[in-house]
Image (cartoon, rainbow, N blue to C red; front, side, top):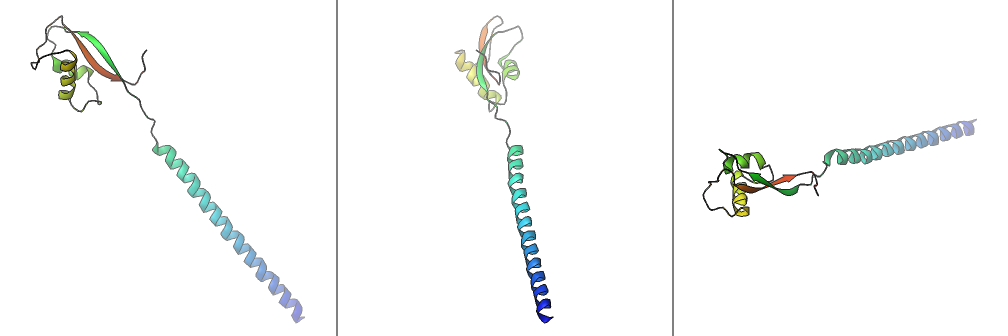
Length: 119
């Protein structure tokens, strides 16, 4: 009879040990899956679509009352560091002197950026 009790206790011990090993393995697997899928989700959320800007030039006729500063406000965007930088580029493109004076009826080439690709 003693032998029988010893065998039952031994079986229970090994069964508990096996169940504990299965539980620990399952927890490790669940943790690994959570980390793996969590990293995929965070990468998907963190990546913003890359926007490509294309530089174009518009040929604009100056209207009465227009100034270079007004035109800069209309055509300039965040791709320029400042309004002064934009005006400097406009002056270089149009071979204007250091004065800001422009004449009604005159045409100016004005740079601008767009996300739309134009042929």
